[in-house]
Image (tube, rainbow, N blue to C red; front, side, top):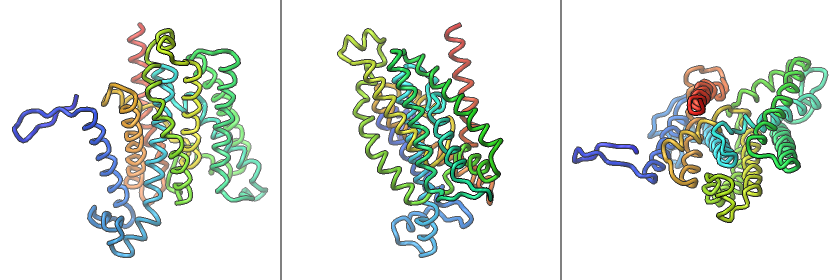
Length: 347
């Protein structure tokens, strides 16, 4: 539990609701900071005035035309990836399950490479609008996820084997991406490199509105299944004894996680480790039932990507460094920590 000092000097213990509220406040503070920092920095007061339309015209243009789409894309994609990771970990009962581990992100990368290969001309330029790239990424993610689901259904695979199918197909996709980048023109390789690192600096309002509409459909469906996620915490026989259709529930959760991942990476690229770290952090901070953990994971995921984008903008200005570089720096050591802790538990 989290203890704070009250006015009487006695410790005040935050419940789950208080912790979720604290996480939400953290996201808001990071959001104001993210909008305020840039080539033209603004104080929090100026930011808030610009947001409500009462600030200077130049501030309003900067906030709403340039920085707000980037902020919302970071928050939405981070939330989606974190929620996808949470759902996968609950569905597979595996602490290492994440969209990147199951090959969904690699499938999206392969879709992007095929798009760049087909629609690049001899001058290394695209023959169609780059606006079609998100559709290619989503298609690649869905195709690879569908392949994993079909293999799981056909073989009646347990959760661990589903992860192994994902790892194998992900390796296949990575090999394809590598071959395309080695053999392809400079334009194709550079575009793919930016996408593979994960970045939100090219976000547009059309991208934000599309992602928001997709998440408005998927997230409520995911939250409706949190009670089933609690039942999946039991062993398979006990969960089935409570009336839960275990295999059908796991497949539904896998499908929802795939849609969440595909929606996020279509616009923000392959931002790594958010889907792995955020659910673990939510479990440590909140505990208890799946619903508050899911909300906490989404907030932590949003905070991670917003903070990562803020760091790269402040530390590397005027260069546009992908936010995924920061999440990888944070997430990779945490991934090793999980592996080492699991090894000690099973030793």
